[in-house]
Length: 285
Image 1: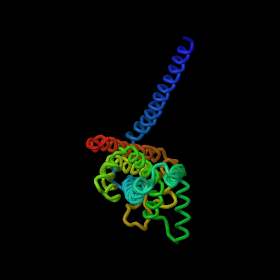
Image 2: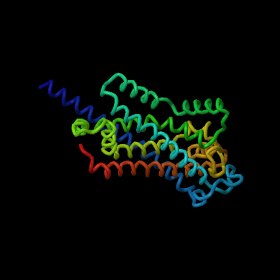
Image 3: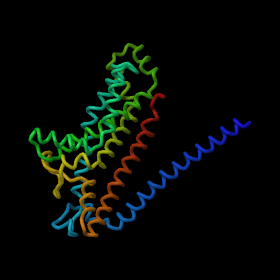
Image 4: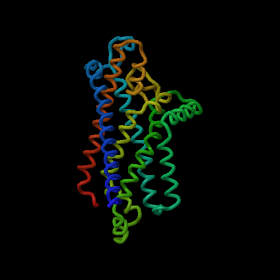
């Protein structure tokens, strides 16, 4: 009886801790969204969304953050495409040509986990050193390459987990029907399209919100992006630079930019959830 009661007490304690964690996490997210929304909406205007910075913008002049919005989208889109070209074949090789639980597969996953844990500022420093070695300057292209390295492990490991959850019988059935290994990989890709779409969208959202990796590689400019070899602005850096000014009006615009960035990431996250629900209806489980 005492043993049973002790188990009940332990269970009650851990359930209480889990509920507290959920409430605490929800409270923190709500607080962050509340502060950003209240301060951001008050300073947001149509001019900010449709115009690049004008002369004296960082001293309270006119203009907006259109250059940063366009720059963030281009950086994230280019990095996502480049990372996809590396992540998808890598995961297909991992599951199509390496045995489950093999030393090579474990080493590859460990490498991706280590890459995932490396701070993005380290990738930025690496990209900056590479630019100096190659004689390049800060540009949209350099930012895309560096940002692709940041989101590559996120995309690859997410897709890897999705593929791992696919039924083992899928491979056996496909190979039993006389399919080649290449044809099996085609079946596997079609089976995991919902997870792949989710991984791509999550990586895209991660790319939009990253600042450290593009600080030294993409640079910053008040002009609209027009070349792969020229510097480009981004929303995280726009927020950083505006918060660093002594003008209250400009700091208020930083919260408006943060609100825009938050809404963009929220929409992308919702699209990821929606795609998983809609595309996953015909998946074999």
